[in-house]
Image 1 (spheres, rainbow, N blue to C red):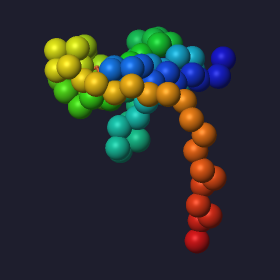
Image 2: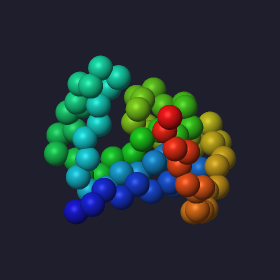
Image 3: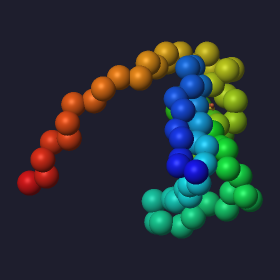
Length: 76
Ligand code: FES
């Protein structure tokens, strides 16, 4: 199953499918077999990079609608 990333309005990024999450040193988080997980997008989670529901308490507002991005800039 391809990985699907959903951008939830006023909330986290929701990953579904096959994925792995790594820290800045390349070490993998142990996800205990989860195939769905939410990553904090508001910056208020006490359990970053994962969402802990703080976006609700903090009143995080971000409505996102899918759109086309411009082509990537060529690498020099
Ligand atoms: S998006 Fe849920 S705690 Fe930040």
